[in-house]
Image 1 (cartoon, rainbow, N blue to C red):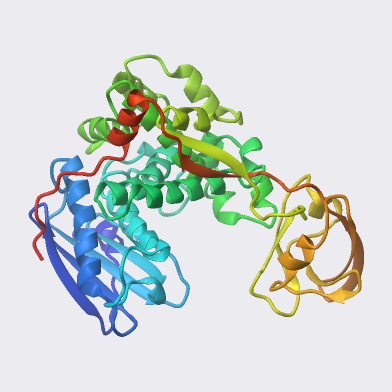
Image 2 (tube, rainbow, N blue to C red):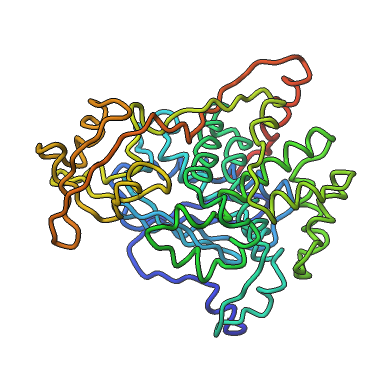
Length: 429
């Protein structure tokens, strides 16, 4: 390695592995898998990921590296990835990759493809286009920036879109993925407590040190940032541009020169938009106002239909649905019945009205009741038996379902252009 920064930017693994290679954009790509299940369809995976890589390279008119490595560690349930300048290290459940007999793209495999698209896009948006705070990599202290909504938010929006653009999923599958992103961003009250710029700036001290109340206290610059990216993309497309044009402008201006803090990124977006966006940026980045993403989606033939996360009355908590010994509380939502009853994360509810309950039958037990019913709970908290009363509320419509809403020819044209497929050159394997 030329220096310490280069050394730590290259992940290393020593193991038995299976490798596939392909060429995209004239660049050799290697995919290395460790601990896979027998009969995993590695040829299909490499072919699908190659289409994503070719799509991204085409967007930027070339790859910024001479060779690339996907280092894929497979296990039972892990998930995640970390970008590097010419590689990425991924972890993913081995059972979620397609077998040689699999047909179609499952939701789980789609998640893998989006993960690959996400980390690969970081080759441009983070590893080369990067905030000034990340220049020089100060390893002895946190590097604070208010721009993670650009680097992770834009990437989180575009990862699923790129899988669609590469032709690997259909419109219905894409909208389901977008729906999940929107619902994750809106599930708690954190969006009303913390601005997007604050979420970025306090990533080290809050986002990566979350406690049991995080869902009520903070917002994710990944998911909320993705919503802002979606809105910008749709507004830009209405004006004959797109978020991809912004990314290309960023690449041209800051592929080698770090992006400064402040309003430089806003100026670049306004240049692509052709008008001032100050009001939007103040609401989206520096306030906790609700954003009208539904209104924008409607202009592209997509409706946001309110729905409950679970049907029936609302208990205001989530429990571990796999626990067959007790209903262990995993989330307590502010200002909803569970919080009013004094429930806390890791409480183990063992009985409702004197009858045993567990995570596996919790939903069925709650569904037997009506809004307004009061349930007598027995719970264990840190080994101590406690009792409380849970008063159920009407179902909470805190989620949305995205549906195709046919419109006039202009709406259909905008929708078709937004979700169009890329024109790709053949990929060598």
